[in-house]
Image (cartoon, rainbow, N blue to C red; front, top):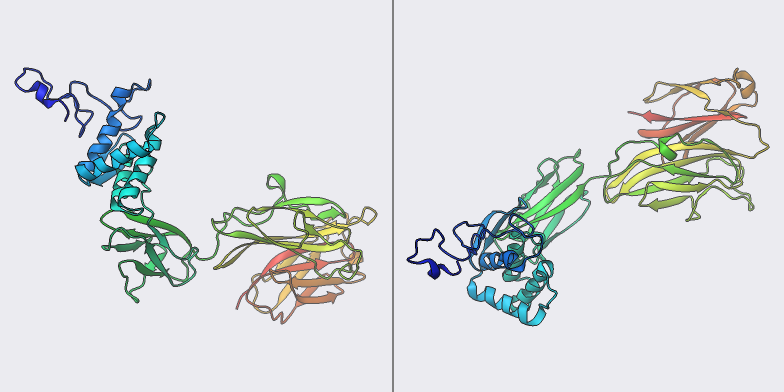
Length: 432
């Protein structure tokens, strides 16, 4: 308290001029005053005497310590470093760093620097200066250079290390829904070995190191990427145009994916007659000049080139743990004088999922119906993997097709059916 002697032996209800431990006290004759920057009793007109109790309360907490909740609803707990150290830090900040324009935010930065000058860059004293400022509502509680190093994303067993720890009394914890701490090797003061909780673990997790001074938090991604949905689209969520002219352009969008992952885009050239034509301009991603790119944004601009035929656009979310299929679209590229294809032949595919054979019934919508004239020169059936590689290709002379002994790997594949004037595709699933 300040000026408590003035009220000794008087009949006043006041016991001091100011209370630095509790600036809001009504027993101080100049109170109540603010204890939180821009909190209760703060003078918006900037009146310096009233608002100076923010600095006074900061100095009290730095010297003597204290805990509670400030007017920002922030919980704080500061252990004091003593009057002498607090005075040394404040004196150096005022003599070396403060100017006539120093405000509370810059005072926080400059007193932390003064503490580092005197007691070291990663000292407890510098940590306490920062924590005391947080207690009075100035700055964040990110008060230490201490951090947890280790893999992100986490794919398997990894060791994490607490770097520049301010204490040797450290305990570790993790998000129990998707992570576990391994007992071997046993956790030390500064390291811990962590693994996914099980083979299904996926999503955001965290690792924390707890010391008597602070808790250090590290957020990580566990496992392969996730996506909010699946399927590719055009502007406004409309379907991708699968019938385009040569030398035209399209923008294609993919769904949102988890933090830390990238989009992998690929244009599969399929079995196209232009592949060996030196004058052909095959489809490519604008800005890259390539048909295979990695991109941080789920949006690409495609130039369709001057080669007619069928191309497949594929998209995945990828990180160091693996990938997730997001979607694909088969696009028919043709010239202005070419006959319009019978878009979206109707495919009745069963069983799907399948483990050995597949039946495909082809139906052409009007005006292409009936289907028989379209298959006079045959129907080509191609099955691709999700990277656009051909796994199966055969010609048929009927609209009712049975594919036996597919000999495909378990997982997702793309079935493409092409006639002389139309094509369509469908995703198929192979199971054991």
